[in-house]
Length: 423
Picture 1: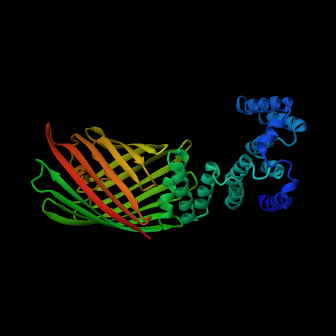
Picture 2 (picture 1 turned 180 degrees about the vertical axis):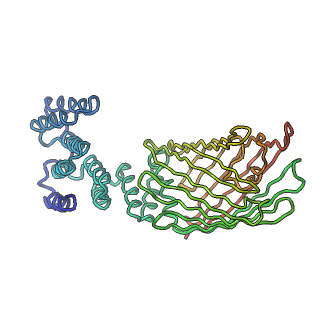
Picture 3 (picture 1 turned 90 degrees about the horizontal axis):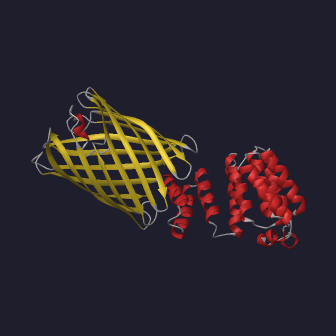
């Protein structure tokens, strides 16, 4: 039905000359509303929000419009009520009439675009968004929707340009910052990069460790895929690991993580590793995931993980936990991470603190081969920065207080740096 009615509504909406619109200034229409219509409008909002009586609120809005038929706020709210009541065609008619009476009215464009987004009509939602932006080019709400819809239509480069423009205007906007993080990887296309870690021990091992990796990632229609070749020099031995990760799209709210790795040197890397997680985008810029990791050195180790993340203005907070069942009970690794974004999605400072060993940290993963779950505390800081849009540089320092025998502790420092090129 939407495919038939939308072209007719747009034709009807755009055919009317500007001089024939009832009002060009929506705020003036609000002033002209009668006191009775104002009271009924507030009553309708109370019926909808306080009592969830949408059908009653619809009738109250229709009565209010009988008193003030050109009031845009009442008409848009009536359209929203129809949308919430799953009566999309009636909602479209009200939004179109509000825009016919009040050219480029921002709230009508937002509400109509949301309706089409909810109903899977991404191209129509984008057209409405662009129509609203013609009248309100500085609108953050319409701009955010444009970026999100461009990404949903797989127009990732345009989506990234749109979200970068919004970040320059409103770097502390939570919704925009959250969306930027999701669009960044989708827009990357291809990336190739290298990194290096130098790991020093004050007493546990006489020789430092050296680790390096080469990575290549590509954005596909199903999600991003990353391939790694990891190198390590530990215990005066050299070894490599081959690893691949994928982040498949499942729906607008869900995406996955899949990992598989193999190494012929089981003392330097796990001989086999795999893992999977399910991520969900939650309201209010929250994100959560749950999954597992499997490592095989000379025996199998299963780990279960879950995390909760939250964007707030230009900050990102994340708490992640790994649980490791064993004969002596269940041990855990917990890490709290904060990023401060000072630019785009790849411009940030990071700090982290936690306990235990993470299976996603290649610098210390071999310590999970030990049957003993000794104590570890860690602090970490890092920096990441984009140069001329294509070049990404990063560096970090991690400190660990590692119990390598019962009640015997050593210190460990990990200095890392790397470079990525986007193309």
